Length: 348
Image (cartoon, rainbow, N blue to C red; front, side, top):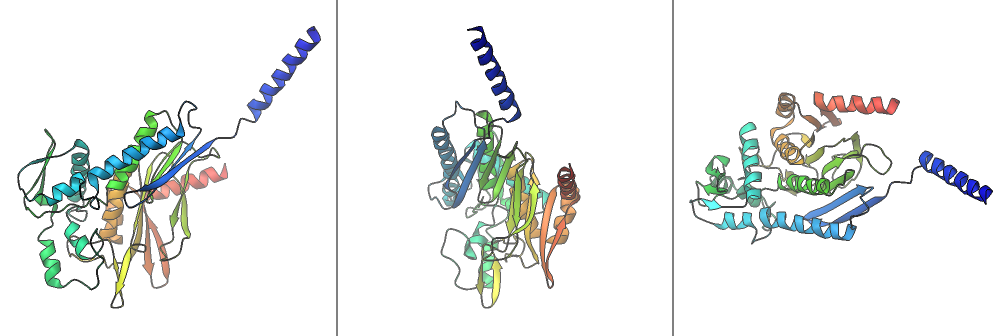
């Protein structure tokens, strides 16, 4: 009997040693679906066993549905749509969440001297990139000038207590598409953290947030696409450690008329789609909403101004410029330091 007990103890110790040397493989849970006119994906590694993935997915769906119900211009009964339809110039009480995103957007407008402007909606719609029918012709100069009179972030006022918005023009129209997806990504990440989930990657329409490690116990790796219409190829791969990543480009959402290509990125100052050769901007930031807004801002500003502001704000920014000899990469000092760290890790 003693020999049997000793043998069982020996087997248990050997098993424990093997488990220590070869820990169980990480378990990857992947949830996905549609939201905000695009798709979402949530990858989680080693999710706590007490969490039911189906229940978690239902919670995430409700969270995304709630955000869509606040900030969508495609949903006619959303809080944003109701505000846009409201012709009053009095204070209109709104949810704290909508006020927070609008307030953040106005701060970006001020910091970018109007390059980022959520009131650009009338111009977006005029050019056929909003909920309305796609453009069949280039808008006239008169139509553009008329639409511009309905824009201007200065015409939008906020009140924090109680939360409210006010139009200086009754026909002011907001479009949060350049910031709402980043906000939604951050809210999902915040929810996952509250559930004790530490290792994840959240993706909504290409706006990402990472935390911890992937299923191979490495830092999450994010691919930046080549700016080639109709082609899905990788331009650069970066390691994103606990941060948001957002990309804005002119090579996916555009239309062609009269031999010209028109980007969905509208310059609020001119009323026209941007015409410079910057075709893709990627921003890495601890806050995905900030990365989202900055990526759009830089697409409006163009290469030179984008790099200047990126250095001033100490932002990690990766830019792709379409030249006569091909696509040329540019990046800020903060992004360069990420590349140095990536090379260092590769040599370990």
